[in-house]
Structures are given as structure tokens and as C-alpha cells.
Image 1 (cartoon, rainbow, N blue to C red):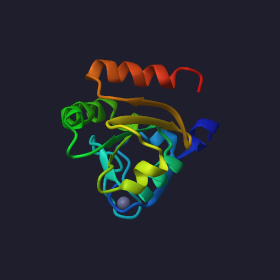
Image 2: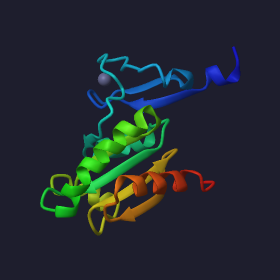
Image 3: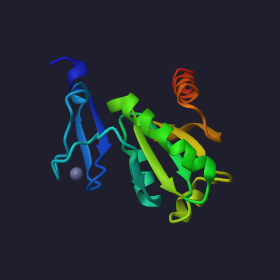
Image 4: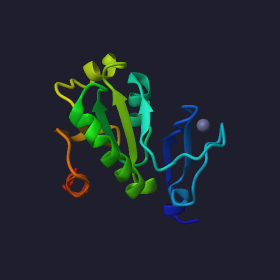
Length: 152
Ligand SMILES: [Zn+2]
């Protein structure tokens, strides 16, 4: 067995919150949750709360992008379809989360969110970039790629 096949990554199940661990080589074979047997990726952003957010950030073998939003925020509403499209585009390469800062105010406080929408990008358990305001899809993709390739 080579080193590459032994390398394991962790991912939190969006359905039951179980932390799954599996070889990184299986990332592209539609991995399912060891506990509830649901797919670990479903091409959609995952709605989460303060605890779930930290659990995902601390246990994701892929980069995590979080959309902090609120129902009363017009730009947030407009951005929602863009974020959905991005989730489909990135497939299993990233974890996309949504946090409703109105119902989960603790999450907004934990991460010092001062305006919405705010996008925060995490890798290996730490924040690597943050941006306030909505973006069209091509600019969002470009921003993420730039942040992840800047030697963080
Ligand atoms: Zn599960």
C-alpha cells in the first residue's frame, strides 16, 4: 500500500453529524456516512448552527466555505442561488455551509460577523480568508481559487 492510499480525511455527515473518516482516494466515489448511510455530499450547501459550524470546520478534509446570511437581507437572498450553483460546481472538493445569523446568533458572535452576507473560507481548521458582500458566480470561483492557492 502506498502512502497516498493510506492518507485519511475526515468529514462531518450533514444528516446525522457523525464524523466520518475514510481514505482520501475514496473522495471521488460518492462516499456515504458510516452511521446513517446517507451521501456525505449532495451538491448543496448544508444549513448548520453554531456547534455544527465548529464541528465541520474542525473535521473537514476539504476546504470549507461558509455563507453567513439572514432572511431579511436582500443581497443575501440574491446570493443564495449563486452559492447553490457553486456547491454543484465544486462537488466533493469543498464543503459549503450556510449559517442563518438571525436564528444562530451565537455563530455570528463566535466568528465576529459584522455585516452580511459574509463569506468565510477555512482550511485545516483555520480561517484563511473572509469577504463581505455577494459576488457573481465567476468572481466567487476566482476568489476561492486565489485564496486556496496563495500558499496558505
Ligand atoms: Zn450520517
